[in-house]
Length: 389
Figure 1: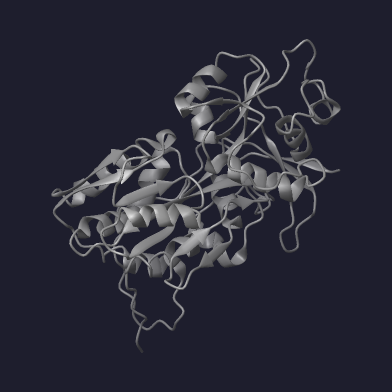
Figure 2: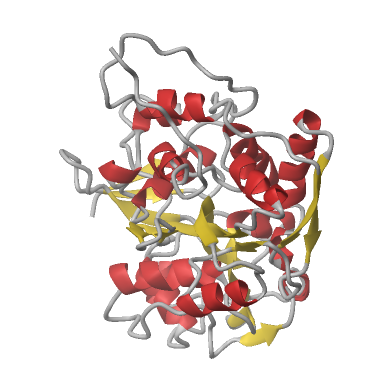
């Protein structure tokens, strides 16, 4: 197996998401480029007056507040308030892909039948672990599968040691698995990846809850105990692991792009550019009403239909392949489209603006790939006019 290290230097210029305005387009022939379509749509969200509650998962508290602060700076009479994941609200954030039951439950609290759901953001996921002094471990999917299914309990197991020559893994505490007792998009993304990359070791399929783990009621309880328990591991969004100051595993990615080398690349979780590329691996489905659901993005090789490299404004090192982080969760937003309460839809539209996506990035999340973001304009009733000759 040929192995290269995939890690861009810190400080590389990233996409500037704030302050994008409408562009005048003349003499163009359809279809317009994604960045032009996006720029046109940025000016089509009207300010409203009033406030709206947004139900947010506990580990994402603050993310929608970032969006709300950006929105209030341009629409001072329009505000939002984050509430808990079980509180009824006309806007609800999921950290994974909502199920039919999730949509039905949300519809039950909406005073009208018109419910909209669209992808909202992405985020990289990895296995966080508490082994002081052993930052930078590489964990192949076979090793993570063995850890999570209980077959691997020692850090000296060949599936781990073989990928980490030079690390002293002896005399370490046994591996303990920590997880939430409620469904999470991070577990959904990780088990989707394991089902694809290590099907012999991981036979449980895509899960949202890990059954054989020590479970906790809140993300704060989980990360707090993780940071104090040597040898413990947890499937976490990278931003959550960073906030808890626990190490995060590097993951292998196979270059399967068109014309790619087929070699295995080692990706590190602290590179936001790799996350942006990895987000392009999502698959999209659209229901009869036009609502959009996106899968977790797994494998690190972007789908050309859902990723536009030029529009992403990513700068790679010379010779670096166009592959990204291999385990990406996908958050979604459910919207109660109530004409009597237009603030909810307006907030949703703003969250999918470039400025709103930039606010998510400030929080530590990954903006949607431009082709995916642009597709959300139609269900969110953002009209983009085609150019005329």
